[in-house]
Amino acid sequence: MKKAPLLLAALLASAAALPVIAQDMPKEAPGAPDPARITGGTYKADPYHTQVGFDVLHLGFSQYRGLIGDITGTLTLDPKKPAAAKVSIDIPLEGIKTTSADLDKHLKAADFFDATKFPTAHFESTSVKVNGTKAVIAGNLTIKGVTKPVVLDTKFVGAGKMFNPMTKATTEQVGFEATTTIKRSDFGVSYGVPLVPDAVPLTISVAFEKPA
Image (cartoon, rainbow, N blue to C red; front, side, top):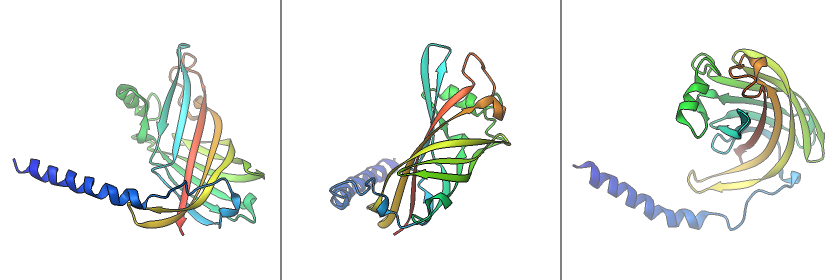
C-alpha cells in the first residue's frame, strides 16, 4: 500500500521539473548543415539517437521495416583531413525491433541472427572518399562471425554544440546518414530466401558527440 504514495510523489516531482527543463531548451535547433562547425577529434556515438533501419519485401505483399538502436562506437575526424576519418560501430542485435514481438524473437533466434551466440554486429571503416558534404565510406561488416566488405553512401546532416538539460552537460554533436544494401546470405542469414529477399537495404542515422 505504501508504493502508491511513493509513485505519486515521484510523478509529481517529475512533473514539477518539466517547466525547468523547458526553460533550458534552446529556442532553435542547435545543429546546422555547416561543416565549419566541426572542430574534430574523437567522438562517441550517441546510442539514444543512432539507429540502423532495414527494409524488406514481405512475401510480395508489403514493405516491412525494422530498427536497431542502442548503438555504440567512435568517429575520429579531422575537418582539415576528412579523408583520414575512422569509424568503428557496434550494433547490438539483441536490440532488433519490429512491430511484432514474435518476429523480434524469431529474428534473434538461430534461423536469423542467433543473437545469443553472436550478440553484436560490427563495422570498421577502411577508407573515406569525400565529395563536398557527401562521402563514400568503405569498410568491413561482421555479422555472425562472417566479415564482408560494404560501402556506405554517406551525407553530412549537421553539427553544433548542444546543452542537455537532463545531464547538464554541453557536447559538440555531428550527425550523418548513410545507406547501403547487404546480401544477408553472405552472412549466413538465409532463412526465407527467396520468399523474403536476400538483398536488404539499410539506412543508418548516426549522431556522434564529444565534450565541448
